[in-house]
Image 1: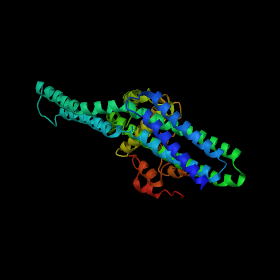
Image 2 (image 1 turned 90 degrees about the horizontal axis):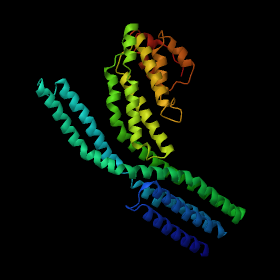
Image 3 (image 1 turned 135 degrees about the vertical axis):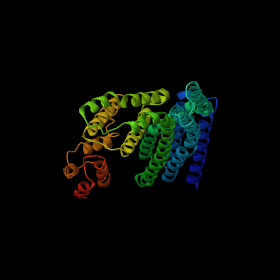
Image 4 (image 1 turned 180 degrees about the vertical axis):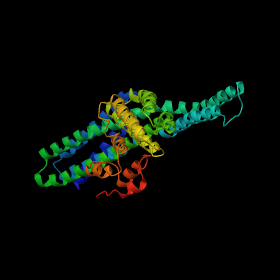
Length: 385
């Protein structure tokens, strides 16, 4: 009874302390990473004191309950306070859609599908299309821009909280090991392990979702650069055409747009979050390039050009990141290896080497893009499972 009362009183005090910390630091008047750092520091200070008091009670049940309460507060009050700032997605997606609409309207007007006028009338049509699209985008972009700083601070808060949590649990474990008898530590150790898993999973999921939202808000500006691949031919037929394709590479404009997209948020993100966001954008680009390639045909010269494009892309992207980017372009690199085969039967040898991230069906579909290869011969290649 006394242990339960002490545990309940300590839990109530911790809840009150965390609620006070989150309420003060997350007020509308708070801004900047300093306020988020203050929030995280305050919450973890309250929880640290809460866990130390529980350990000092020398009661295993009280300590185990305190650990469970701390996990609940991290995955509840703190997470709610930070997640409430992750409101970028809707307005940002509207802004991205409006910008994509602007590109589409101007392209349509320029090609004459939206208006059949010529001369000054056509110019007026293009200007009108752009004006309409820009007007439609203005409100959404403004809303997204106004919410962006709070979103970036919340993402940094989540990342900081994740980095602080192990220290909190380690301190609690050491304190309990000092104060509690060995038999009581078994229950506390189990509670600590459950708390680690629960709090880490919730905070990690929230951070991942927030970064996904931020990534989705930036990908529309990359779309025109990526979709330019639609107009790029990989059936070249000669060394001369290969040289011409090399001089008109899409890599530079795409990487330049990616740099600009990252520059718009990098200063407001922690280094870890910036790298995680860049990784998501790189994966998006690689997946889109692969999807567009599957709509094309490729000859021997085109395979060589695609290999050069992927190599140049990997090299340029590597300059943007402090981490290796090869994992994000690994599938594209393997696609170039498949397209560069001289005969259909060589697929079996490449497959036997192992390490392919492509399924057998995907590998055969890639080979089928080669104009020189026959589908019957590709299907006849035996690939051990």
